[in-house]
Length: 320
Ligand code: UDP
Image 1 (spheres, rainbow, N blue to C red):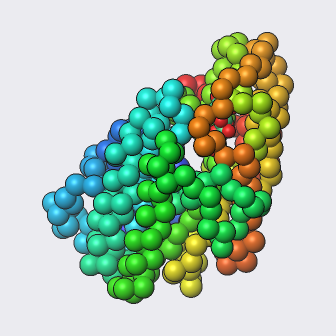
Image 2: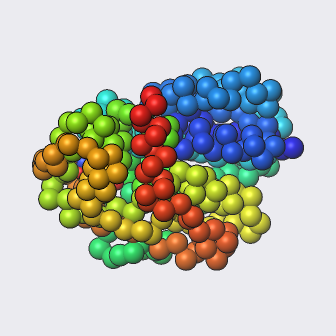
């Protein structure tokens, strides 16, 4: 079976992707510098002879891995801090330069490897490229409404650059590359302390602490369970004729953040009160993916409903 490289393999989504690729029979190299990723996410895979974890920063010189990677046919770029919560040490707000570099220099380095190996490439972009969108739902042809120098710009603009350089390699060097835009995703292996809405609310509810809704909770998000997302990522890479395509991947089931707080509180049967705190700067008011393109190109559609996915996520957080 073919060899794949997953940059960001110890992260929340990257670790699930590695696991699924191994089940499908691929030989998997996972790279991660572990600034926000966690080796614990890969514990299950230790001892699997088709899997190798390499602690490495993809913004640095990767020449020493040339020999090892000579058989790589597919490169997934999932490496980046991803939480916007400034209260979390793991957020991109606290790793601003690293976030800019991993999506720019890191993407450039991986694209060069892809080009030299005549491999295939997937760049994990984000719904953040739409910023605080003026249209909803967001389809791939919407250019977005992004503050180019606000606190979130280190992520938003980095992802936009990552998209631009991916397309530059597709156009200039005929690299077989595609871009996915990941909308809010949740599930086991999320970091307990990364400050994301689902991990925060579940852990607050489990510990009987106040559930902290930012703003009045009327902002919306559309939450996708990680197994659905991974299915979409794999199809985006392996389905034919996806080179040069940009595809939204997410679950269009849109909820207000206050609704999410109420659902989680009820599911856990928690005594926590719901409290309201200041809304972070540039927090998008609406987020809802138009997934018609992924549906038609990939025959992909999310299968796991919110209650089912939250149940699995709650079980996970009870166990860690
Ligand atoms: N949020 C919240 N309370 C929290 C964490 C997040 O109300 O404890 C809100 C946040 O302001 C945003 C939404 O939940 O409106 C999703 O936040 P998250 O950090 O998960 O991801 P984002 O979609 O903003 O990238």
